[in-house]
Image 1 (cartoon, helix red, strand yellow):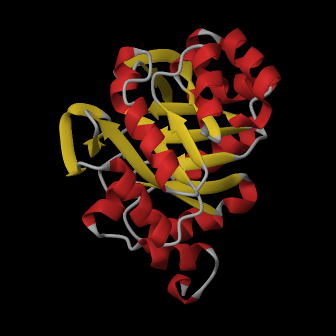
Image 2 (cartoon, rainbow, N blue to C red; image 1 turned 90 degrees about the vertical axis):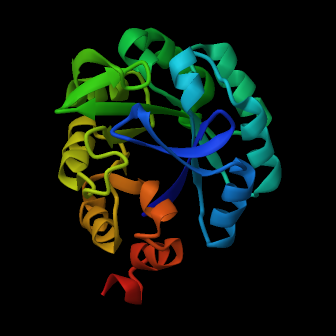
Length: 246
């Protein structure tokens, strides 16, 4: 199981939103690259980076901050937020991003996702962000009008290698990860899924570990790391079945 420390960038700062609401923002740092280095030094294996301004604008808006992260750490980075065309995908991969996360286009332009998978293979990840089981688009502000499980099946059918599933109602709330819904999505799609939203403490890491055999390959951790309710080194130990998992 892979743990992905999250770095959400807005206005060049490291922030966290509550339930995806841009009017519920907390700033945790002014240097995303320094934050990335902090997580690398704590033992992270992979980083999850989101360009929040890009998600709203429909195109990358914090490229300078992303490039600085890539220069600062030696970790693979998966990046989402405002990636809506093949040219942007190609640009980001050329800059050193390991995986590119497609969100809104998965609902609105499935043929583009299919072509991206043909061209870039496993570098393409689809982010399915849902509230009450229904996918949301445009920075989570608009309903996509499709059940998350149905969207997951469609994405698997066009060649997507993995999915990130975020329960919007739990994101940034520290209310607990929705491991069961994530596992059901993975089973429906038949491809690996990464859980996101609501992680608070080691209990949540264990919950994800329990559904790993059902296709859940990892979990994204955001606010819990920034508030201190979860220590990354302890979480990594728990994910590997160490003493902290007992």
